[in-house]
Image 1 (cartoon, rainbow, N blue to C red):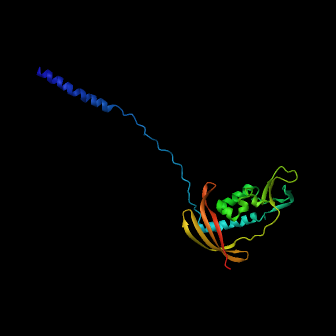
Image 2 (image 1 turned 45 degrees about the vertical axis):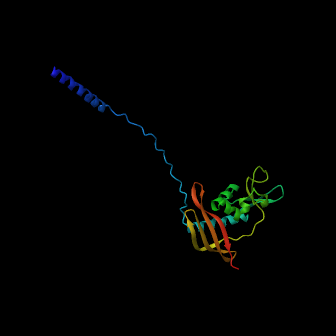
Amino acid sequence: MKKKFLAIAAIAIMIPLVLCACKKEKPVEPTQPATQEASVEPETKSTPTEDPKAAVVRLIDNVNVLKYVHGVALDCDYDYVWYDENGYAYTMVTDPDFQSIGDIMEYLFDTFTSRGAAEYFPDLALMGQDDAYYPYSYVMVQGDDDVPYGLYELQGWLGFSIYENVRDITISNQTDNSFTADFTVDYFGDWVTLTMGVVGEESNGSFVWKIDSIVENWEY
């Protein structure tokens, strides 16, 4: 009887051990992470990489081009003249870089911030938006049988001078997205010091330096 009891006890002890062994051998189901890692889009660099002094030279070159635009002094074909409803005469522009109002605006706002453009070239920046600057410097002509479709500039050349011989550039107040540049230029046959406020701004998917202000410091 004692042996039978011992055998029963031994069996009772072995059953949970066998069950545990079977439980351990059961394959573990792979678990999915609670949240999946979202794909990270590459960040757009928000700081211009162009050297500030190189940017000053480039921006002044752009300003000089815009002085020709502002002075309605682009290349034209004088065989084609269009008159608006008030009798103002416009001549067809042949300059390949400027064949629409959009070309002018793109060049202007790639060079200046909105504030800088409105301060330095208000008649271009506000063209068609403010009647204070009528007659407009440029118009797009289409649907006129007498002249070809295209960009036309107002007849009435405006005198101007460009900034030449940029030199002695000093950079100050520099941050990741702004700086001040002081430099000397030859302007209207005399030397003048310019103070240019420059900021970083998005343009065509990247950050570039643009002019926010220009101050001419004349010595009298």
